[in-house]
Amino acid sequence: MEQGSRERPCSRSPEGSASSLTGAKPSLSGAIRAALLTADPRSKAMAAREVARNWRLGKLDFAFDVPMPDKPAWPAAPQLLDPRNMPRRGKGGSEKGRLALWHALAHIEFVAIDLALDMAGRFGGEMGKDFVDDFLAVAADEAMHFALLDRKLRKLSSHYGALPAHAGLWETAERTSHDVAARLAIVPMVLEARGLDVTPATLQRVESQGDKDGAKILGRILDDEIRHVAIGTKHFVAVCGKTGESPEKRWKSLVREHFRGGLKAPFNDSARNAAGLSRDFYAELAS
Image (cartoon, rainbow, N blue to C red):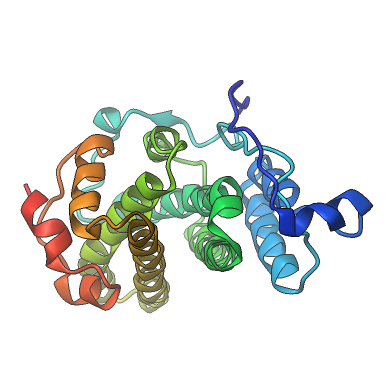
């Protein structure tokens, strides 16, 4: 996919500028941008894991000398449809329904790789190394999730791209590209938190169909999602702490402004609470 023409101006951390000028290490932002602009799904997953690994091993300079693209590169398939035009999946009991379920999950995790990479690359300069540590770890998790789901599809004699997919997942990134608080409020604290609500029921349904392999994948994703929501909540609360704002009030304001569609019950209160997202945040906004 052709990238957009408008990009967030780059910023440079004083901490990383000296080593960047000497060329001792590749810049972190350059490595993240390259991963975002990798279109092939398997290659993007490997690139995300490599960026996370190289950052963890100290092979990348904490420098933000190139901007993030407005849009990541994506493959020609799947065809991306408006959510209103997506075919209904049903409950996944038929072979067609099962394929649709696993394909939809694979697409969510594929886009989640880009969301986590963009979070680190777009806001890491202002937020610091702990923030980068966390969201590159999230990107590596999402890449692993995608790899597991891609393998699952191939076991079912299908592949990622075989079915149409939801076109709206990146829109939240575009609407919140200007504000780290808004991005944290919507991506981990709404979108990933929704995964905490719906994944247990999907896992139970998959188990009831005798799909032990699928249930194991969903269990792994659910465990990781709790940690991802906790990471987002932690950094959101920290941002609010710098300005003296109430995290709950600020979150509600940002959700009303940037999230299209209400928060839908039922909620997995225990998983949300384990991630630091108490009902004080979301109960008032439930539709």
